[in-house]
Amino acid sequence: MSEIASCTLIQQDEHTRQTEKYLTMFKKYPDVVSVEILQEMLGICRKNAYLLVKENKIRSARVGRSYKIPKLCVVEYLVNQT
Image (tube, rainbow, N blue to C red; front, top):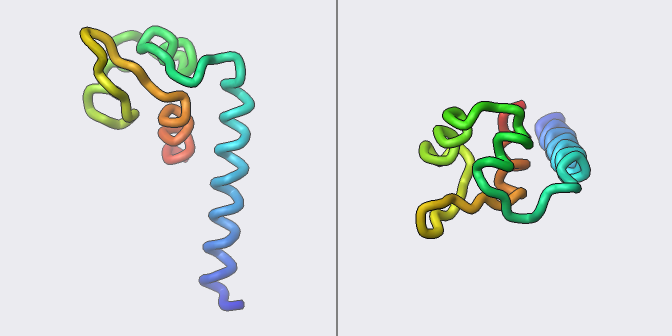
């Protein structure tokens, strides 16, 4: 196996481990969360939570006047930050 291929496998394994860690960390939260719950999950203020959603850094869906954020999108955001 080439060095490049082995590095790619190591990165994929690390990515999978990080994703699993965040999923277990957020186990008490529902699969779809609101901006208020997103604030709690990330420990950020309301303004920053809305910025992450509005700038599409965390994918979400607008339902009426509120945002619905899949928990997996929060995990994806966190994994991509590291």
